Length: 235
Image 1 (cartoon, one colour):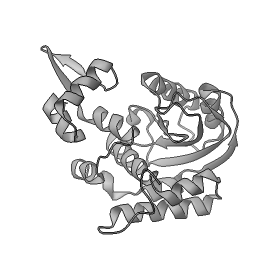
Image 2 (cartoon, rainbow, N blue to C red):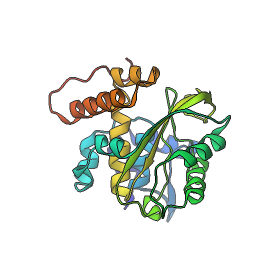
Image 3 (cartoon, rainbow, N blue to C red):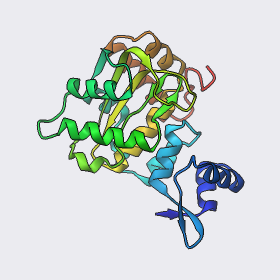
Image 4 (tube, one colour):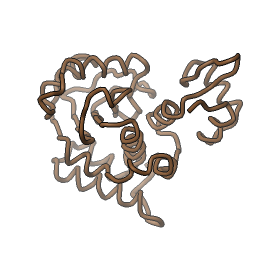
């Protein structure tokens, strides 16, 4: 779906002048059609959530109701938690993770590695605070049947060209079967990673079961009307 500048501003809850400024600075994915700027909705939502912009989960669930049938907790259970992942740079770390991932036999690990690199070439998935969320831009090409999120703690922080310029120490590798599922999980992650208890558990590299419990609680709070989160972005 091609959005106008006004549509993009309404979706991202900013002024049209801000949208124009982002386009001119080359920081937001945009196209020029008939001398007017246009935006792809999926790309725009991915761009915004990867930068932890304040976009409510209801935007994604309204647009993608089927994607809301599974939870971040389910995807975390389907994934894994890797500790002490080695590598001195982005390429080496992602390559190392490929060897450790639990994947169906039909998934080509080298191909997955290359498409992850291709996504990084478009702009870092480092969202700040020492965290990155590597993922493929077009999930359907992997032929995965269910979404999975793997948490990867690095042996040493590396430069990931994150938006805050800080080294990255933790990766959430996101693998999904559809673009709908991809956007749904990306939005959930962007929100629960603001939680104070989640940040603390990641900071101390808590055991797998504790991490899953903390992240599941944060997601439950997120999806329960009136519930109070354990801290916000500035916590």
